[in-house]
Image (cartoon, rainbow, N blue to C red; front, side):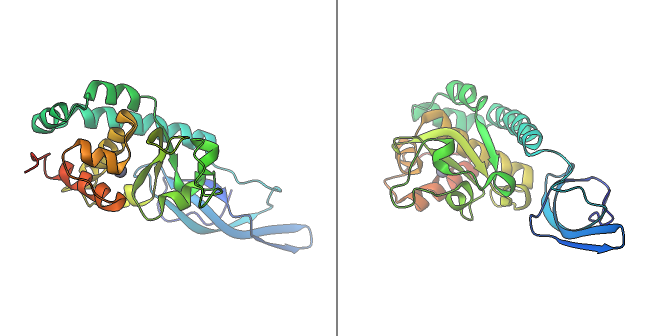
Length: 235
Ligand SMILES: [Zn+2]
């Protein structure tokens, strides 16, 4: 029972900051800190101040991280399946011609594990996919993702993609690959499903799609643009 929910009624508190101030006056106590809230309608996540009378020690309240993880995974697997089904015939043909079997991509995507960076970003990449970046062995999911909307983790050997996808907050808020947020999300999910389904990283996936041999970032942008422009045949 906290007295300072963010505006709107459909927020659930996921966590409370470890740093909070405790106030007391006689037998009454309050904690003032920051709460992490999840909006059950549009999936945005925000930090907002919270003011809790009679706090129980360590009590974050709201959904547990595991519950939220499971809700996220159920939803994103369903959305990915739908996005693959609804790909244009032109894209389906172009992918088949590039040797990408969409049936396999869909099957693998049905068991992809998604991590939401706001509350799972502290996991280390090596804890999840087994990949140890030689330059940054303790790299966590948040650091791996950087400012991207989503990223597929490398496999343990670092030779390609594993079946783990990190989702950033921009995925839920920014429209970049299409007319609306849902279209943008679907293209991102397909981009990641092409990694998980083929095991190819950005550089190798761009080559497979006929987009050329590009450095990692350029390859990633080229793949997303190719999807956004309805999978044109390479010149
Ligand atoms: Zn990519």
